[in-house]
Every structure is written in C-alpha cells, then in structure tokens.
Length: 249
Image (cartoon, rainbow, N blue to C red; front, side, top):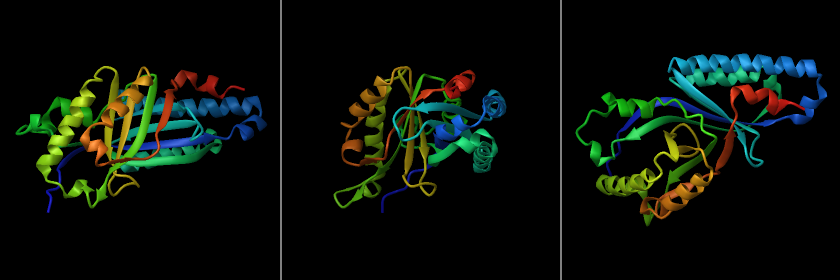
C-alpha cells in the first residue's frame, strides 16, 4: 500500500462567488443604495483590521465571464470565522443583492514532498509560516481552479510509491519557479471538505501569465498523466475604495 503524505496545514480558506442582482438594485432609491454601500464598506474595514493584525486575509475580485459577478476570498484561522464572515455578508443590506453562485472550502497546505527540505523542521521555518498564513497580494488579477488526481487503473496517483510522487511534484515545482515574480500561488487542500481534492489560487499583474504557467505545467508528467481540473474563475481586483464606483448606476 502506498504511503500517505504528511501535510503542514495553515489557515482555512473560503472562495465565495456571487451573482449581483442588478435588476433589484436598480429598483431601490439612491439613498438606500448609498446606505447599503456604506454599511458594506464598514464590513470591509473590519476585514482590513484583521489583515493588519495578520490574523487573516481577504480580497474581492470582479469576475470576468458569466460564472459570477464577484469573488470573495477569505483566509482565517478557523472554519467558524469563515462561516461568520459568510453570515455577516448575508445579513448586510447589500447581501440581499449578492446571490450565492459557487463556493469552495479548503485549508492551506504544504506537503513533505520537497526533497530539498528533507530533515528540516518546516513548521518552524519563517518561509513555511508565510506560506501557511499568507497575506494575499493585492495584484490586479486572480485565477482560482479546483483540481484532483486521477484514480484510474493505469494512472492511479494514490497507488504509486511516495518516492515517485516526490520526484514528479518536485519537477512540477521547478516549472512553477520560472514564473517567480510574475505569478504567486496559494495551494489549499480540500479532501474531506469539498468536491475536489485541492484548490489553486493564482495572482498576477498580467492575466496572460495564468495562461502561460498553466499551459506549460500541462506538459509536466504529474499533470499529463494524473491531473484533472474543475472550472477556472478569473477576476480583476476590486479595491475597497472602488466599491461605490462598481455599484454606481
């Protein structure tokens, strides 16, 4: 039986996408709209305080395409905090216009696959702490997608030896390093938590880099033979001071 991989785990993550009910938004008065926006801006300020204290992180993105209008990404220490955030959004006046479209629940993880780190106490490493409890970069674009590993007779990721998995993932990581400074990523594990097995969140200044890195990684054996992907969601960063303009009629 193949040996399971030990993970080092960090903050919990919620990707929450919403359709915006523009028709209903147009039907209320300008004064009501302004009050709803001001209330939500206060909610964002609460999230910013959490981020300033390095107790979590958040970002909001305007989704390109028709899968949703907005994508909220939250990182927190516990699942309870994520549920409280979702509830606070739903209780807000603006929440009446934010219709749930899709969500993904996971936990930031790093595995012990990397042979370069063998023998080190990864949990004490500042680098690892930063990866497990990251402050999301406020870059212009983000791309999220869920993925899983195949379990087919001729390509069962969970049946191959740990050494082989280590080698394949290390080679895969070397491809990603070519995009240092162009793409940042957060890897989250969702086995037992959501429909897929992992979630990948990418950040970039230029969305073309998403296309390039994902395409190049498709040629790595760990992807060509063992990877399956869900829908990709791409969004443009919405700064807190841009919310009113985004919702203006």
